[in-house]
Length: 190
Image (cartoon, rainbow, N blue to C red; front, side, top):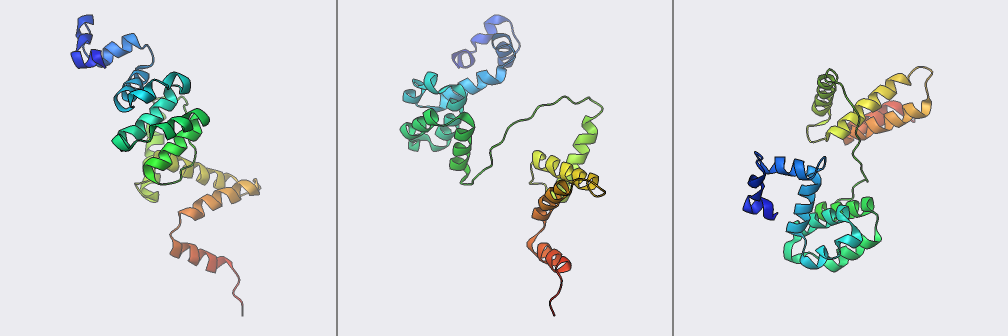
Protein backbone atom coordinates (compact mmCIF):
# COMPACT_ATOMS: atom_id res chain seq x y z
CA UNK A 1 0.00 0.00 0.00
CA UNK A 2 2.92 2.31 0.74
CA UNK A 3 4.38 1.54 -2.66
CA UNK A 4 1.08 2.41 -4.32
CA UNK A 5 0.45 5.56 -2.28
CA UNK A 6 3.99 6.91 -2.71
CA UNK A 7 4.21 5.65 -6.30
CA UNK A 8 7.50 3.94 -5.42
CA UNK A 9 6.72 1.34 -8.06
CA UNK A 10 7.93 3.85 -10.67
CA UNK A 11 11.52 3.27 -9.49
CA UNK A 12 11.41 -0.20 -11.04
CA UNK A 13 10.81 1.06 -14.60
CA UNK A 14 7.33 -0.42 -14.92
CA UNK A 15 4.38 1.18 -16.68
CA UNK A 16 1.80 0.66 -13.92
CA UNK A 17 1.23 -0.46 -10.36
CA UNK A 18 -0.39 -3.64 -11.76
CA UNK A 19 2.79 -4.44 -13.67
CA UNK A 20 4.77 -3.91 -10.46
CA UNK A 21 2.49 -6.39 -8.68
CA UNK A 22 2.83 -8.92 -11.49
CA UNK A 23 6.61 -8.83 -11.04
CA UNK A 24 6.54 -8.98 -7.24
CA UNK A 25 3.62 -11.38 -6.80
CA UNK A 26 4.14 -13.71 -9.73
CA UNK A 27 0.89 -15.39 -10.71
CA UNK A 28 -1.03 -13.88 -7.80
CA UNK A 29 -1.60 -10.16 -8.33
CA UNK A 30 -5.14 -10.71 -7.06
CA UNK A 31 -3.74 -11.94 -3.72
CA UNK A 32 -1.80 -8.67 -3.39
CA UNK A 33 -5.05 -6.74 -3.82
CA UNK A 34 -6.74 -9.00 -1.27
CA UNK A 35 -3.96 -8.28 1.23
CA UNK A 36 -4.28 -4.55 0.60
CA UNK A 37 -8.04 -4.75 1.20
CA UNK A 38 -7.41 -6.58 4.47
CA UNK A 39 -4.92 -3.92 5.56
CA UNK A 40 -7.21 -1.05 4.55
CA UNK A 41 -10.38 -2.37 6.16
CA UNK A 42 -9.52 -4.43 9.23
CA UNK A 43 -8.80 -2.75 12.55
CA UNK A 44 -5.23 -3.18 13.88
CA UNK A 45 -6.28 -5.59 16.65
CA UNK A 46 -7.72 -7.98 14.06
CA UNK A 47 -4.74 -7.66 11.70
CA UNK A 48 -2.48 -8.82 14.56
CA UNK A 49 -4.43 -12.09 14.71
CA UNK A 50 -4.37 -12.79 10.96
CA UNK A 51 -1.52 -15.30 11.13
CA UNK A 52 -3.73 -17.41 13.36
CA UNK A 53 -6.80 -17.34 11.07
CA UNK A 54 -5.18 -16.91 7.63
CA UNK A 55 -5.54 -14.33 4.88
CA UNK A 56 -8.56 -16.02 3.20
CA UNK A 57 -10.60 -15.62 6.39
CA UNK A 58 -9.11 -12.15 6.84
CA UNK A 59 -10.50 -11.18 3.45
CA UNK A 60 -14.00 -12.23 4.52
CA UNK A 61 -13.66 -10.21 7.73
CA UNK A 62 -12.44 -7.21 5.71
CA UNK A 63 -15.65 -7.28 3.63
CA UNK A 64 -17.68 -7.00 6.79
CA UNK A 65 -15.42 -4.38 8.40
CA UNK A 66 -15.61 -2.25 5.25
CA UNK A 67 -19.41 -2.20 5.40
CA UNK A 68 -19.86 -1.88 9.15
CA UNK A 69 -16.93 0.50 9.79
CA UNK A 70 -17.06 1.56 13.49
CA UNK A 71 -19.85 -0.92 14.22
CA UNK A 72 -17.73 -3.95 13.19
CA UNK A 73 -17.80 -6.45 16.05
CA UNK A 74 -14.20 -7.56 15.66
CA UNK A 75 -13.99 -9.84 18.71
CA UNK A 76 -17.12 -11.79 17.74
CA UNK A 77 -16.09 -12.17 14.10
CA UNK A 78 -12.49 -13.04 14.97
CA UNK A 79 -13.83 -15.80 17.22
CA UNK A 80 -16.01 -17.08 14.37
CA UNK A 81 -13.03 -16.97 12.01
CA UNK A 82 -11.05 -19.15 14.42
CA UNK A 83 -13.89 -21.64 14.81
CA UNK A 84 -15.33 -21.96 11.29
CA UNK A 85 -13.76 -23.35 8.11
CA UNK A 86 -13.33 -20.74 5.34
CA UNK A 87 -16.39 -21.81 3.34
CA UNK A 88 -18.69 -21.64 6.38
CA UNK A 89 -17.26 -18.26 7.38
CA UNK A 90 -17.87 -17.02 3.82
CA UNK A 91 -21.53 -18.08 4.09
CA UNK A 92 -21.89 -16.41 7.52
CA UNK A 93 -20.37 -13.17 6.22
CA UNK A 94 -22.60 -13.22 3.13
CA UNK A 95 -25.65 -13.76 5.33
CA UNK A 96 -24.59 -10.82 7.53
CA UNK A 97 -24.00 -8.56 4.51
CA UNK A 98 -27.14 -9.41 2.55
CA UNK A 99 -29.54 -10.58 5.23
CA UNK A 100 -30.23 -13.65 3.10
CA UNK A 101 -29.36 -17.27 3.59
CA UNK A 102 -27.07 -18.33 0.76
CA UNK A 103 -26.05 -21.71 -0.46
CA UNK A 104 -22.34 -22.57 -0.19
CA UNK A 105 -20.60 -21.95 -3.51
CA UNK A 106 -17.33 -22.49 -5.26
CA UNK A 107 -15.65 -21.19 -8.37
CA UNK A 108 -15.23 -23.83 -11.05
CA UNK A 109 -12.45 -23.59 -13.60
CA UNK A 110 -12.19 -25.44 -16.88
CA UNK A 111 -10.51 -24.87 -20.20
CA UNK A 112 -12.48 -23.58 -23.18
CA UNK A 113 -11.23 -23.16 -26.72
CA UNK A 114 -11.65 -19.72 -28.29
CA UNK A 115 -14.11 -21.18 -30.79
CA UNK A 116 -16.34 -22.46 -27.95
CA UNK A 117 -16.67 -19.17 -26.07
CA UNK A 118 -19.12 -17.43 -28.46
CA UNK A 119 -21.45 -20.46 -28.41
CA UNK A 120 -21.42 -20.68 -24.62
CA UNK A 121 -21.80 -16.92 -24.17
CA UNK A 122 -24.75 -16.86 -26.58
CA UNK A 123 -26.45 -19.78 -24.80
CA UNK A 124 -26.04 -18.05 -21.43
CA UNK A 125 -27.37 -14.77 -22.89
CA UNK A 126 -30.43 -16.57 -24.28
CA UNK A 127 -31.02 -18.31 -20.95
CA UNK A 128 -30.76 -14.94 -19.18
CA UNK A 129 -33.39 -13.51 -21.53
CA UNK A 130 -35.73 -16.40 -20.80
CA UNK A 131 -35.08 -16.56 -17.05
CA UNK A 132 -34.74 -12.86 -16.35
CA UNK A 133 -31.61 -10.78 -16.68
CA UNK A 134 -31.15 -10.61 -12.90
CA UNK A 135 -30.09 -14.25 -12.85
CA UNK A 136 -26.40 -15.08 -12.47
CA UNK A 137 -24.41 -16.68 -15.26
CA UNK A 138 -23.99 -19.75 -13.05
CA UNK A 139 -27.73 -20.07 -12.61
CA UNK A 140 -28.27 -19.70 -16.37
CA UNK A 141 -25.67 -22.40 -17.05
CA UNK A 142 -27.38 -24.68 -14.53
CA UNK A 143 -30.71 -24.26 -16.34
CA UNK A 144 -29.08 -25.00 -19.71
CA UNK A 145 -27.65 -28.19 -18.22
CA UNK A 146 -30.98 -29.13 -16.60
CA UNK A 147 -32.68 -28.68 -19.99
CA UNK A 148 -30.06 -30.89 -21.61
CA UNK A 149 -30.48 -33.59 -18.94
CA UNK A 150 -34.26 -33.49 -19.29
CA UNK A 151 -33.97 -33.95 -23.05
CA UNK A 152 -31.44 -36.79 -22.79
CA UNK A 153 -33.56 -38.65 -20.26
CA UNK A 154 -36.91 -38.43 -22.06
CA UNK A 155 -36.55 -41.76 -23.87
CA UNK A 156 -35.37 -44.75 -21.84
CA UNK A 157 -33.15 -42.55 -19.71
CA UNK A 158 -32.75 -42.27 -15.99
CA UNK A 159 -36.13 -41.26 -14.57
CA UNK A 160 -34.47 -39.80 -11.45
CA UNK A 161 -32.42 -37.41 -13.59
CA UNK A 162 -35.51 -36.43 -15.54
CA UNK A 163 -37.42 -35.79 -12.31
CA UNK A 164 -34.53 -33.71 -10.94
CA UNK A 165 -34.50 -31.55 -14.08
CA UNK A 166 -38.26 -31.12 -14.04
CA UNK A 167 -38.18 -29.98 -10.40
CA UNK A 168 -35.56 -27.36 -11.23
CA UNK A 169 -37.66 -26.04 -14.13
CA UNK A 170 -40.84 -26.05 -12.04
CA UNK A 171 -39.24 -23.71 -9.49
CA UNK A 172 -38.81 -21.14 -12.26
CA UNK A 173 -42.51 -20.85 -12.97
CA UNK A 174 -44.50 -17.93 -11.56
CA UNK A 175 -47.10 -18.99 -8.96
CA UNK A 176 -50.02 -18.67 -11.40
CA UNK A 177 -48.33 -20.98 -13.91
CA UNK A 178 -47.47 -23.48 -11.16
CA UNK A 179 -51.17 -23.60 -10.25
CA UNK A 180 -52.18 -24.03 -13.90
CA UNK A 181 -49.65 -26.85 -14.21
CA UNK A 182 -51.05 -28.63 -11.16
CA UNK A 183 -54.59 -28.31 -12.47
CA UNK A 184 -53.58 -29.77 -15.83
CA UNK A 185 -51.93 -32.88 -14.39
CA UNK A 186 -54.12 -33.69 -11.40
CA UNK A 187 -57.36 -35.56 -12.10
CA UNK A 188 -60.50 -33.57 -11.45
CA UNK A 189 -62.61 -34.99 -8.67
CA UNK A 190 -66.30 -35.23 -9.51
